[in-house]
Length: 173
Image (cartoon, rainbow, N blue to C red):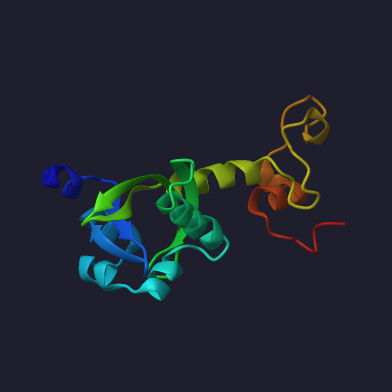
């Protein structure tokens, strides 16, 4: 069991409450967050709170406490987290309650889905016009040549704005 958990590509932690602390964290959790094992285990409540993006903290810790209280909480969730470097990442978690040293605790598996989330955000941006926010997959918002061929991005200022997100003040009327 220990070899399986320690060799996992996904972060695994056992968290307890009063105060919030980690009883266990595997190497993958260190890799995901940028904190070494000792830093994670020794991290106090304020440090652990800082690992979760400020906009997701209330939901993350609310779910944690409700799960420990025996309430029905969805096992699968997605949250943003903050790496030691300050970079924001995305994680998909799977949590369950267990008994650890005679007290309720949670075991949570963290899958780093940052690259998948970034790819999805880039795809969504590519489909939206930088100036209007309109969805470009609609036929009403396609920019075509007189023969119906798509206009090349590099030749048309509006398409440059759309592709790069930059505002080209001198070129846009």
